Length: 282
Image (cartoon, rainbow, N blue to C red; front, side, top):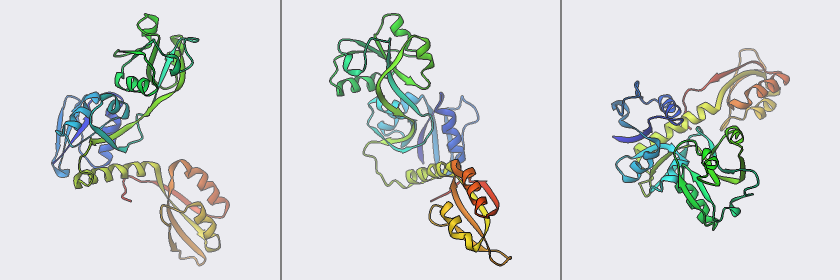
């Protein structure tokens, strides 16, 4: 039975469980549940603190897990990401009071406060900067006001909370993070159960990104229509009862679907429909 670690709370938890549900796996109904067995799919889910997941997976006690790239790297665990999941995206950056520094090259002799000590210490070392790192949990922007540090390193989305604290983002991003599937470094790459799990999640990612588009068009306009809807390999073409007309079915990126429908209409296509894709295998 495949043993999988899932975040039990925070921004990773809900989207991870939703994706697993779309992939056909049972998920817990109560947040107090710590273990859930899905016998039909031969999977056992363990709901753990997101920061602990990389440690459990690296120990070999669990086969794979879902966590954030930032948490994986910060843990220093012997685990590696094998699939990007596209949610819980964030950017990790430095911030300080205006005029304190222009970038990481100015941090020598300063103290940096962060909740991600491992990531920051490595980034400073990689840049040859001799600076102290202090670990804080929670909102680190108050560290500068209270004199604990001259610089902070934290997840930045809009930057509003930093500006409200009188701080500014400086330098290049330390890293970009998102939810990822991880496994122990050196684990067999061709494990059949793991590969099936990954295929299911990849199917969800594709299904979320595409719609199925159906439309009718005259045969003389077919090449122009197919150029707009090439599909993943090739569209399906079927003759209609009315001579000179064909029906076309193709997968189209969801973000482009409205524009493609407009363009198809302009070249004479009619009965243009889009349908959500709930699952797929490529």
